[in-house]
Image (cartoon, rainbow, N blue to C red; front, side, top):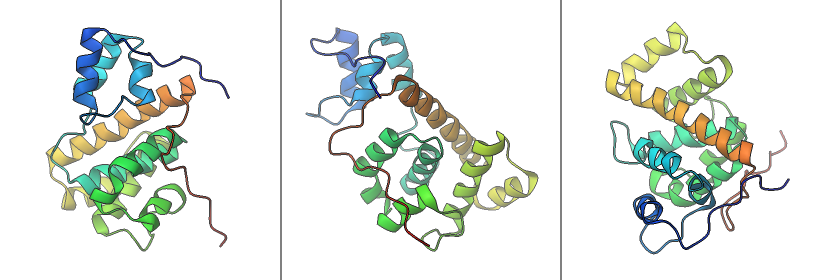
Length: 185
């Protein structure tokens, strides 16, 4: 599989460098996804202002459960690996949880009740592009309206990111974790 759009290389336009400085931790080179998006600076800017990685109405753990599950469902190994590397330890998502985002369902032993609902939400949206009434009702007992809107948007946003990654065939980040192998039953 060859990369379809080569990532941008330095020197970067001033506006692109500014976006990179806001998207990446200080001193880190921009990841391939952002350098690819920089081939259209307008799209990179929209990505920067449209991302949901800032503190929001949901916890870091909840955000990362949604991102990892959505990335796994979409086969976006790149995004899954980047989020495991950058956020999983701080979000309390150990190797069992990481494995479960790829291979197990909402009933996996590592999930608490909120996590299980988030897995179900990702699965339903991925499969049907809808949320069933029973799941919506269950979500309503755990998450307020603002949180439910953020969760729906987060799933949709990471579907979009998966489309870009998979459509452009962006090469995996060196050193980022890969999907875990499926364990025998």
